[in-house]
Image (cartoon, rainbow, N blue to C red):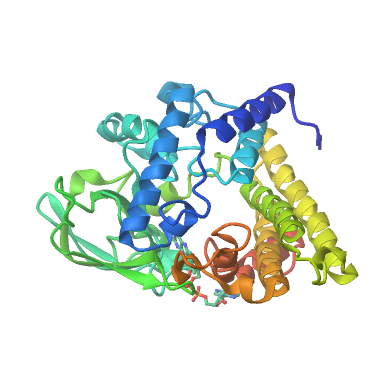
Length: 405
Ligand SMILES: Cc1cc2nc3c(=O)[nH]c(=O)nc-3n(C[C@H](O)[C@H](O)[C@H](O)COP(=O)(O)OP(=O)(O)OC[C@H]3O[C@@H](n4cnc5c(N)ncnc54)[C@H](O)[C@@H]3O)c2cc1C
């Protein structure tokens, strides 16, 4: 593989860096924005969402928000290298929402009815709407196809009963997997729907209840969604009834190198070193002068670079029209583990400072930025969300090493 970025990719990297430094006002210590807001109380969370949306609008104006979309839907079909270089810069700068449309846009492009494409793609492209994702259930995560949320046809509607978990169910719309045939083999009885979660006034639809899940930092980032006789128009099927599983699996052609992870870790390491350098007091031991600390920081830096190369390999494979499988799992498993080790390791070196959280209130000055200790806590969940470590290892073992099931 070629590790050298193309000229086009280098150009977007430089341009995006200049742009993001000028236009993205990272809220940092300000508790009204940034990660603190996404994880904070409802007012802060709302404020953080607004700040992210404002930035997304700037990306729309710049023409970058949907650079990865096909031309037929208003995108520019940017090469994988270009997307990779762009995403890397955005993640390093801690800027949110660099590419738009989430998982739902690619699914709509391939499987959506014409009215869905006309109705939703322009609004997704202009960052005017976002969809929540209704996939995981309490007993259907690794085994997603075992989902039990039941949708029964009644006239022109489906009547839906069940529970989803581990989403952020605050948007007006949701794309959701439901079981429409309980007797069929599990992959064949699933239907993929678009549905309104909230009405025009911002109230949840009848039958919907959302409850926040407190995480290790004491905040509600994730939610549970309860559906009781919730009526959804049957015309909202994406693809065909009982073929939803196959529609849901069609996002593979979009960039999925996970390049944001090493970029964010690199930034964290650099900021941490700066923080230590600026916070050593006269008369106290200089943390950065300690050989043990220097060794740890240096070896993390090497591992971040290794992770970056694994991500580049996934991007390169996609640019060659190959479909990465075990390679993506290697990125996920290695990245999760490194993420946990670095954030928790830094918190350990910082001692008491490393355990402060935005929720401790404005009287405490948090180290590095508001996010570092919170991310240390959140890192625990990263090896579960998006597929657990064991599942990634199974893929590496079976599809990579050819080991028996
Ligand atoms: C922080 C966080 C964020 C999340 N974000 C999202 C999201 O955005 N969207 C979404 O849809 N879901 C999300 N999830 C849900 C997540 O995908 C599931 O929790 C995850 O896939 C595990 O599924 P489960 O909870 O059903 O546990 P289980 O699948 O029951 O797993 C329990 C344990 O058994 C192990 N295990 C299961 N099957 C196997 C196997 N075949 N071989 C070996 N070991 C196995 C697992 O590794 C795990 O240790 C999130 C979860 C968390 C914690």
